[in-house]
Length: 583
Figure 1 (spheres, helix red, strand yellow):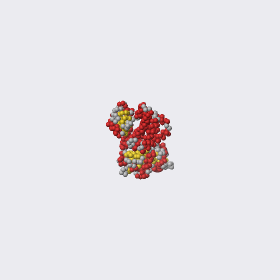
Figure 2: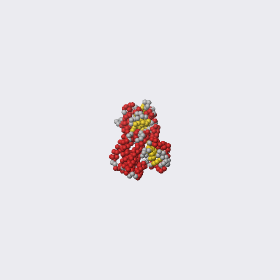
Figure 3: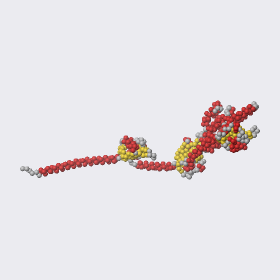
């Protein structure tokens, strides 16, 4: 292969080899349905095909690793000669190669989406590889054609055999769907195939004899291209855009070399164009998608988004990471991400445990102290996801973190406020209780525990009404609170588990969340047992006093009545003394 594509080829090969089994499964159907390959595959046992495929992949892997293509080219020529002898046409090979290439484009795009330079190199290397493979296979077909031609001339020695061989060679050229053209030293088109006719929309008889450069958007660049071939002997991946007669444009890469006569004299240039319109569209879509993702990532200033490889080297760094950690992208890219962790977390194995979990499960998360560029620390919520290539092989991690220092401070303040509120509740000697809309106890204080004799864990979740001498009245009470919003001095009697009774008056009201939704009832009971006992004693004393007063009244009436009788008797006596005696 010409040019240095080793880096791109190795990336291409890593994806190709990783998804080879899946690709074979996907392409088996089209291969079996192919008019030429299908019948041939039907005669080959699967074990034989698998063994041949394994040998070919092994030879290809060695060629890519060492950048030495001799053995692989020999194997390709042998395969080309073998299949040519079995009646497989050169165009049939081309059909299969195009299927494989189309399958690989989205796989390569997915694998190197985050690294555009590697993606471009891998796609470019794929095109070079398949061009090389088709060229070597084509050589095998041409060699066989020439051998047949020589045999025909030697045996028959007539023009008919030469014409037949020429027609066979022509059929190989026409089998290519890519535009092929021969150009004279003066820059005139001397021959074209059907692919060139299709790409330009101009018939063969009108193309032949015209300037090659006339059919491109940049004629001068096209002219410079074939002149370069005459000067150097070849060009590879020379970019041009063919203009169809209806105005439609086709982006192509030209590979071209000189061809010579029997005496070695240069006769012209043979040029083959590879349509890269689809590849350019994919790359454009990729660039737009990457731009969108970059915009999303960079616009996220609250969250740190950090891409890493399996060795924990930082590959990507967004604006949120810059703001949270203080490092500019150029200061941190390529460094080990351990600089963002505290030494304690690294030495304790907490960081390794997090990454191992993400590697095994695909995702891991936790809260950690993180270290800024200036050495200050902050609390962060960290989520790590594993990144895979198109074949599903792990290639790195994506770490997302956010500063939760303010959240932790707010939680601490909330806990403090909650503890303070709780201490106030527990300080109350009166029984306090919260009740859900279903009438279940959701919380109690120590006063409720003492008055019922039941521990907190037994009280919570049970019916509020179960702890009173009149359960229905208790139920009606809290339902009245939900309906009206409150009750005051609601009388109930609490039954202790030892059967001791405590008379109480409940004051209760609903409590709500931040949005105003009613969550339950908060009820406070005031023990009125002593008060009622005192009232009873007072009533009893008052009764006794009333009885004594009644007795006094009876005595008084009796005494007064006796005195009145004495007065009346005295009057009668005096009246008798004052009456004169008669006679």
